[in-house]
Amino acid sequence: MVGVVIVLAILIRTTFERLSLPPLIGFISLGFLMRWLEYNWGIFSPGAWHVFQLLAKIGIITLLFRIGLESNIGGLLHQLRRASFIWVGDVLISGGLGYAVAYYILGWEFIPSLFVAAALTATSVGISVGVWQNAGALQSPTGELLIDVAELDDISGIVLMALLFALAPVLKNGTSAALLPMVLTTGGILLLKLLGFGAFCFVFSQYVEQHVTRWFERITKPPVSLLVVAGIGFIMAAFAGLIGFSSAIGAFFAGLVFSRDPDAVKLEAAFGPVYELFSPFFFIGIGLHIDPAVVVPGLAVGGILLVVAVLGKLWGDGLGAFWVLGWTGAVLLGLSMVPRAEIAMVIMNKGLELGPWAVPSEVYAGMVVVSLTTCVLASLTVRILLKRWPQEQTSG
Image 1: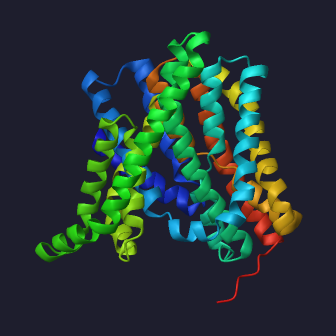
Image 2: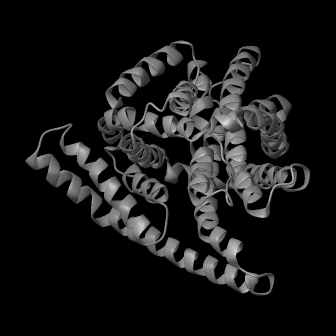
Image 3: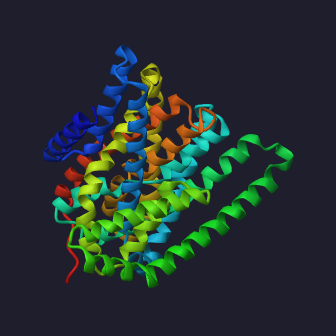
């Protein structure tokens, strides 16, 4: 069955890329089809579920490692002043609007509403960047600003995810009288751990990583030597899990460690086959987690959250970008930030693993609808608008 899924994933990726559509749509649909077949005919053995759960976890690690590896922290810090103004409004408006609708309109509990809010702050820049790249517009002022704001979105999404995972059990079990001290204590411990793990990653990046990588290059031949990067990424992800973080967070930090390497392009090329093999299993796992019994209510919920997801980014990014780029640039930037895929679904997936008190099946199904629909709508809409409003490239 795993072999069949690998072959189908390759076919899905090829087909959707030719159609200029995000392959994750096909991966999630494949996972849901497998769950539907299991729901009706019981095609899986108990062991098969464990295998696909393991592959999905490996998929999360490869996905977040790749995001970290492709991050340009130096360039981001250089553009921080310009991008942060838009990013702050983006996070506050998209997250705040998501929480308000989930808690006050849909009537969900406090913790599920927090998960929805955190997921809606994230974006999936990879969906829109491909459209901008094909249009030859990525090196324009708007395209460069898009990358900067999206990277800030990724990093803040990771931080919010870590904070939410640490605080959710406290919020569930704490009494109202003792809640604030418990939240402050848990948040303080998390901050210290995050600083400590970040310091470890910085030291490893500055003084250890290149020596380790070069040593393996001497005793083996590329690309085998560069695949050591994948092994170190898994080790750091596991270490993050041991100290109380999610392995996904550790994988992201591991990617950041190697992103500063002058040979990062070669590292990405060597890691590519590992990423292509395992990352689809994360999205297939999303489909496997969708209960067919909640699909209909999930569609209704997803329709409401879809409006929130689109308006949150259009207002959150567009209002700030208007003063920098004008109204056409603000619309392009806002629509390009609409897709929710990797980080958003990692947050929801981890919440689902905590239990229905964190992310009920209906909420999860609704966010899957949001993920699929925003990725399709944004990619098609941005492609049309870039033809109507061509972007001028920056010189040099």
